[in-house]
Length: 145
Image (cartoon, rainbow, N blue to C red):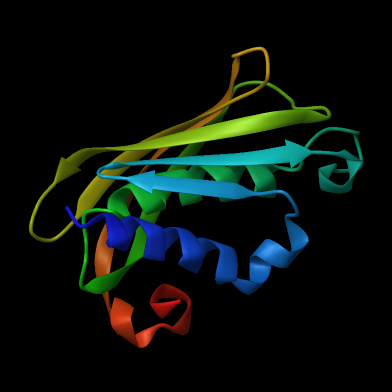
């Protein structure tokens, strides 16, 4: 696999406008795998003083997504489905989400991901199905760099 594809995906991750509201996020991509790190502070909390489920989903989906995207070099892929399981609440912490492809066919890629806290405890996990979209990666400014 072309290492430059992985670097382009990392640039694409960082160029997405939503990343402006997630300071300190980092993404690394390799063949069939991705790693997303994010420092969590009170700005990510819901009313009961723990991390909002939207942040769990974003981390889990992105880790699985970029693992899957590492195997598709021509088209931007889309999340078809993603199922999440919450394991424990998160208070201020540095989280790491690891995504990994578990199955790849001509029409879909299945990937899993887990988010762990600084103590190594799983705080959330999930699995998704990813499919090719209609847009070519080279047509996306964030991918081109």
